[in-house]
Length: 549
Image (tube, rainbow, N blue to C red; front, side, top):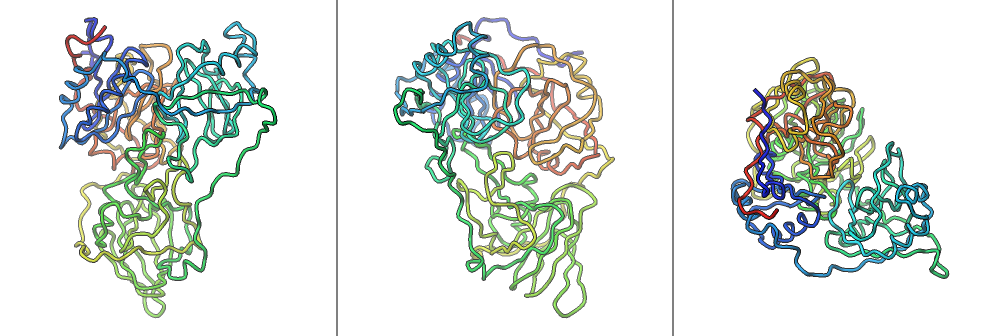
């Protein structure tokens, strides 16, 4: 029996469709960008309690919410009441962007449309664009102008590196790359303006609702293409660190500072990031008496050594199993993980590479005193935000010691972490794009073990197994993604997104890992195998009656 839905045939369903994600998340699909942005305005105006963020995209809205404060049915009812009302008539701030139109794809874009390169430039500068939504990278805005007449497909083969400031076209959108990155947009020019600057408030130059006018630098007397030096985060000097608590002696791989991330910054194209195993981070902080979101170290699966420069209390959770301490004078001591451990000045601490799992968490009483970036100490490896990786020679300071909290008693983790060669069961909620795949592909997805390849990082796990074939052809317009989303690129091999996943994606998501297995997903090592189990059959939620056609 097929797990795929029988799609509604009522005209209303073509305009408003609710797609399952998992608890605390819901996707709403609409007919086009105009309807999507109109409902985005309406839901923002509703100010529903419990909404964490709304991520608009070309034809969808992804809502993240607190299930203890808000039910999905409440969101559905509110969306049905507001669908088809049109956008609120308000003019966003106007941003003018000077462009040098010398892009590598300018002539090809002109040929695709059947006009001259000069006419491409004319149309691009005469149209007024609106920032429809953000995604792909911090500061990357999807700019829409319905009357521009510049609708072209993405490149068939993406470039491995597009320079920062490159101005491109893809589908109905124009966009500007905020930093050097791979990309498949058709490049028509470049701008010296910084799209994303941490020294600016907000850091993103273009946010949803803003209006954009492009200006041709060739027609501006005296204009020159000068890229300003990027603002750098303030780095503490050695003198400022003389009161440091720990000094890193060696680490096989760079260690990252993590907390619980940056929720609510979707408007600037920034995903939450944070610890890959949030439960272990919270547990480590609880053991030393910190608040749950205090910055701590996320250790790579290699040996890590450091020295205590003063008295301290630490705790180790996650993959590592024990802590070895060699005092300045005395015999080596060994402590099991998952308990608070007191250090004396001069103690050298060694944490061995774990035999199971991937990531360990080292909390210091008082938390790590590191600079915050956009309100968080999380290291986002995809967006390149947050503190620099911790390597040998780095000294770390403790924050203010908590006055009221006390160190917790030892605890036993609820889950045995997986090892290479073992099979891990992950429960998933099918959707939102399960119906893009054939029945046979869905049977393979749920009926086979998927090998975790060596291409594994905090962004995601690339899986190897039978090719998942699509039932729906064509290109999926970009839409929001979640931590735990299982996206299937054109090669049919799934990618399981982890903490540093992109905010939006252009490949269909066949399923999402349930909330209570997200931390486990962040601990699966290469060489392990994953067996997915569906929590329920895929069925889109019945559209509201009377929705606009």
